[in-house]
Image (cartoon, rainbow, N blue to C red; front, side, top):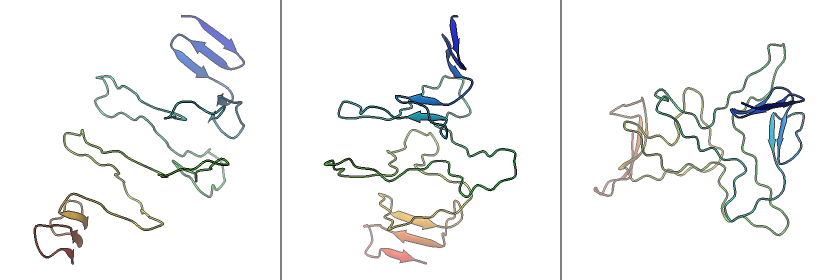
Length: 170
């Protein structure tokens, strides 16, 4: 295994380790960002600033994350106003350009789980939508609010076309 060390950067046949400082990909590193990706405009019709397509081995029998994000603060007395795991900024269009559709978060169909297939699954904590919300479903019970697995939810909106009555049942 060959390795080259230069000011905290170690490259080896087994991968890349940066033991000191920050990283700039396509540009110089900046002091407030661990890994900063920028640079010249990309080419081709479909472009990705970063892509993660990890192939998990058969040893991954518990879980596999393609992206893991966690806010961690230093062991010091201070207050951080906001700790945000993933932040998606407003798009910025260059002069003369247009964007037909903008999706802050778009999740393709999630199907492949033998038992459960969730596009979004949250633990405890409030969920807030800041604008109009549309629920589109092919299920007869398009929206149900109640205890997990409840057979009689507190609120159910029935979108069934099989009956003349559809709407809201409380």
